[in-house]
Image: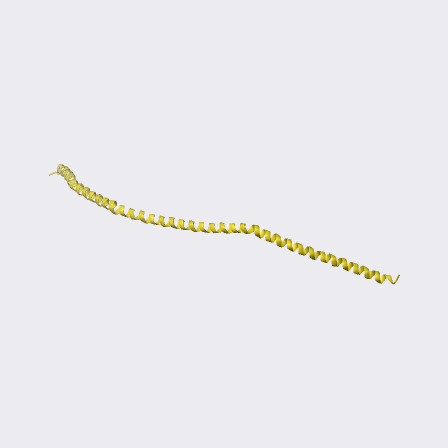
Length: 143
């Protein structure tokens, strides 16, 4: 019996080593299959995402182009508004030169005429006041 005990332990060690080798071989095979499946899944995802990414890139390009067009339109509108402001200012200056300046001159002429007529009218009124004052002075004079 003592002859069988070391052999028996050796056999158990050999069987355990064989089982561990089979388990490790199974883990390696399973890992390789899993790696292949992951590669296939990654390829499939890339194939399905590529059109989506292409459309996203196309949408980005369209958005960029639309933004450039909008900026150009805003710049044109800004230039148009500036030109309109310049023309309105020039028109108002012209209206002032054509209408307001002659109107001021006409009003100045009317003021001059009014001053002339009022100065002509005042001495007549002043004379009538002077004659009334002279009559009153003579009535008061004792002499």
